Image (cartoon, rainbow, N blue to C red; front, side, top):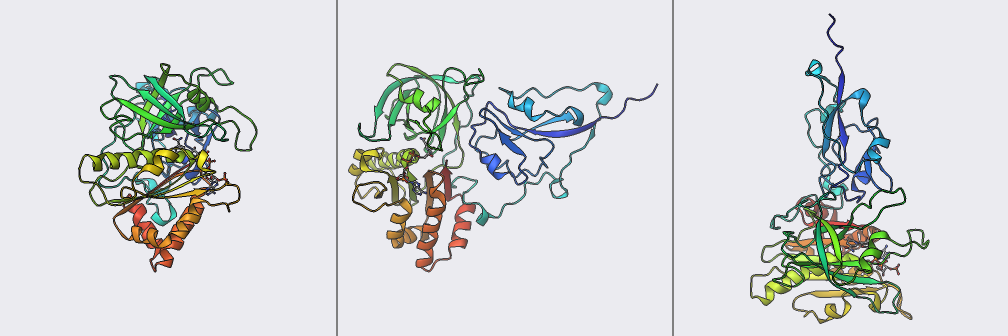
Length: 416
Ligand code: NAP
């Protein structure tokens, strides 16, 4: 009897839809455009992926790092992957084929499974946290197994006549274990189904409360949520998760997943400075970090060095946390606000304010400083240019400094 034909196997790169937070980082990173998405899932085109691993390290959740051994002829198509709510189990193959011919189809330089080294100066953001960051918990609760939190409060932060409807929402976790660090995010699973009849996927929100909770001694967490009422093209649309969250009443229940994020974490060592640059609801992690330092300071514990904040909004009435922000003592934080739409005043963005305070910014960057940028995608270039100009103006080598900051886990960018 003839021996069975050997089957050509491949290691197919797959993304776990239950853990993926749809942040688009993988699609942006992939050098060969193998990753694509629809309104539900991010997927990898087996015909294009060359296994270079460039997308693995930037992924904030680890959902990207799945490899299934499959016969080449039976590789999962894009359509199959787009229909998944969870990763299928790794298939078993008959004993006849127990010694498969493995076609890895990797480029020569990736044969040894080495992750290609990225040139730090090409990437604006660190791929590791500060050396003194606390160890984060990750992925304790998933889309399939979320925990249920109870709404303890839902307050509108922006003035009632302001265009932006931004809410501060506090969720009570009861006795459930959900340890969170400043800079981490949780997932919210809106009830109901999307247009195709499938349950909504989770949406990600940065926590606005410090590690000890919105109220110390209470097991709770707060979020900063802006009601989305228009799409990117300005067409009216109701954001599913943001409207669900902003409409919640005290006592309502919410399905929560996470925690997520192991990089955008604050340094914990005494003497460390934090430079925070944010727009709008990108203020959530900055509020968390500031409040952690404020509590440490109040308790007489060793605190880091300086806190410097650049915060942009359209108007004071549209700036989340405006009142409490102005009450923070200058000894705790050096705050500069930028308003873009105040009648009778020229438009100011955070990068304009950084330029105005270039000497102070450069001085801070000379020290043991960690930089956090969070908010609108559009601010990224302007802020990087302003930081560059501040350094050049102070006679500093910006490319070298930026590369070192990225390399040392000192430069964190989270923009959408
Ligand atoms: P927004 O109100 O639309 O804008 C805030 C300010 O940024 C406005 O003054 C705006 O000015 C200005 N701005 C616009 N383009 C800019 C640019 N290129 N450079 C610098 N400033 C610019 O902000 P938002 O709607 O709150 O958006 C915040 C972003 O943070 C969202 O993308 C959100 O996804 C993200 N985020 C949210 C969270 C969260 O937990 N909720 C966490 C992380 C990040 P003009 O409008 O007058 O031009």
